[in-house]
Length: 478
Image 1 (cartoon, one colour):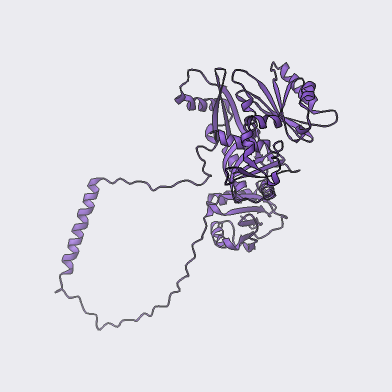
Image 2: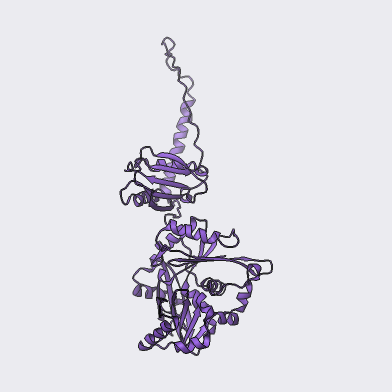
């Protein structure tokens, strides 16, 4: 299984391969990019994100043939709500209760989301939490990962992965408010939780600069919550910057009890930690890959899944022929008329005595037929339209042409399409670049675009390129 975490500027990757002894061989890598990868939880540029993910995946210490991907995204990518469940509600009515709440509380219809909910109980109180990802957003991620031959099998908010790392420290009889923080080199961020899970969907993030130290920031955060009549009981510290923190002095400076994650995991999740085998017997970098490790534990213990009901890509609809029901009266009339016609045919064919007029004296003009050229059969393509990976680049200088071309191709049945701009806008004739392994795509695409292009330029595309087809739009595109 591949665990892939994508944030605005950071990608973290953990690949686990089961060994003969039942352990998990671990390979990992992480990288921070200057370019912004996501905006409000959605990819800004699918092609750029795919390239970044490919770099991280191929940079891990060992390549893997596994493509099953457990995708972890920032909480802001999801629609979220939590509400208390009435004590007298029947289990069979719970799904309807959640759907009704989703319609009332969310600014989007539940039908436009892939989502799931879970219930946590503490001290006799039940709370349901719902999380949903917009279908269009999911489609962006699916296309991104398909460009590098990865398949999404599950999706999880990072907040649930973090919650899983300290859930076993909670006691049902004690209500707590907990701040999970990730301390980096130049920033501190995190989420606010209680016994039921995520309490505030907004992630707090503050830069560490000058006298703005972690202790000062967290102390101010605790005081702000206190002013809002919310008592902060614990702070859990993770991230690479937490490794140098002394628990006693840090707790004293902040004024709130502090738990380093590096002490929680060996105590409560030792069995999972021992499952991971790292090259050269090195310790697993828990503080750097906490979100991936939390997702790994979540995958082992929980049934929550946004994709439990499955999801089909847009445009791929199942088709079945309609059933036609014919009345019995019409069927009998048809059979009777057929039998009568066949009998008359046999009767007429037996009148051999009737002679037809002779035409011996009439001269007949001999017609020598000209040979007909039989066209060579067109080989059937070994691929389907929806399997082609197409990149559309606008080289015409007119804004919106790439999106227009994408819509046309979508209507023709193509699915894997990304758009962008060409390196210049001087293209007069539209250019089709196709890999030799997909050479039949030339004719397929030209036929589908015959109403928009007259004679596009055809060139070969390097087999090493990610897309199978590149279309550079020129000014000839109608």
